[in-house]
Amino acid sequence: MSCYKIYLKPKKEESLLRFHPWVFSGAIQTMDQKLEEGALVEVYSSDNRFLAIGHYQIGSIAVRVLSFKRRPIDHQFWVDKIHSAYQLRCVLGLANTPNNNTYRLIHGEGDFLPGLVIDIYANTAVMQAHSVGMHMCRMEIAAALKEVMRDELQNIYYKSETTLPYKAGLNSENGYLLGHDIDDIAIENGLKFRVDWQKGQKTGFFVDQRENRKLLEQYAKGRSVLNMFCYTGGFSFYAMRGGAKLVHSVDSSAKAISLTNKNVELNFPGDPRHEAYAEDAFKYLEQMGSNYDLIILDPPAFAKHKDVLRNALQGYRKLNAIAFEKIKPGGILFTFSCSQVVSKENFRLAVFSAAAQSKRNVRILHQLTQPADHPVNIYHPEGEYLKGLVLYVE
Ligand code: SAH
Image 1 (cartoon, rainbow, N blue to C red):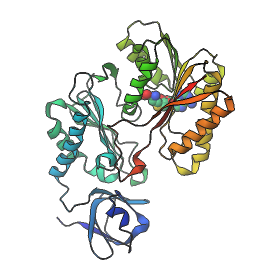
Image 2 (image 1 turned 90 degrees about the vertical axis):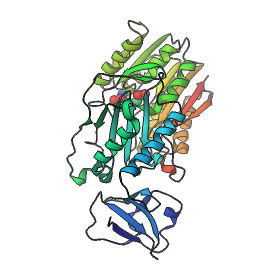
Image 3 (image 1 turned 180 degrees about the vertical axis):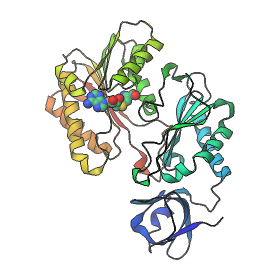
Image 4 (image 1 turned 135 degrees about the horizontal axis):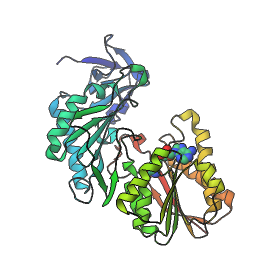
């Protein structure tokens, strides 16, 4: 197969030699004029050494690497990569077990497939392309996925309408690449969920909080819980299973509240301990009393770009400050940031300032991150995005 080529400027090969999976546009010396976004391209050093093969894209990241070895990007390539990812989820005890059928199978760079995300909900895979290259390979990826997972997989829903670069003008439509709509129930750590991958946010469910929800369960006994930014209610049912006295779920989206209520009903039918409110977080926090002794703050990414970092940090500080002010003595706060551009240190600093403002004694009990099915490629530390702190507030 003939392939397009890119030649780097002298000395610009170093990050690729350290297996970092991106080539920035500034590193490029020359490239084929006919190279189009999404095409496969081989990357060479200035002295003509093969370095990597990947998908070309327009923008500051010019190539996302698929392989550092010279190999065809064919059916076998996709099967190998997906198989390796699936094996890891089996090792982690997430796949192929009656207690759990919800997990991330492909986490972009973390599974050496930059630009691709696949989440599994029971017998359905929800696939998201973040690059034109992955979009163009979607049918090959779907075929490989079915080959690896066989009967465990009945449906593949492709959901890239909002994740592909807007400027590429692909007008991709969401829809099934395999199977059809089914009313299936997903299971996470033995708890049941209905996932609306068609209308829900992201792939329909925040799979990345699984371990943190489990930890919360251990602290819930006898506590009055506020699950702020609840979305589909994940933390709420874990708190209920953990023996919480009461659980209040809050989200500004009425649709999210309706999903939360349905999911609570699925696990704890008729349980009077739970109530859910569709309300703005800041409004609710300002108006609430001081009765909660377990609060979860899991807001959406406050910063999607570096230029809004300052505002985002202020947002985290303000949000956490109200929680520190209102949480009952002896209370426990689970606080998170999923913004990739906010570093662990910056997040900690924002929470630290909020704590200082309240003048209360605060101790860090746990420092949380994303779970093992959202692995961080060791050569791509940017892949670490979820940060959380569990705090004991006297
Ligand atoms: N904790 C959830 C995921 C949270 S995602 C889980 O475990 O699944 C962030 C949520 O914040 C979204 O559901 C979004 O609707 C909600 N949200 C965004 N802005 C908000 C605001 N100002 N007040 C309350 N909720 C908000």
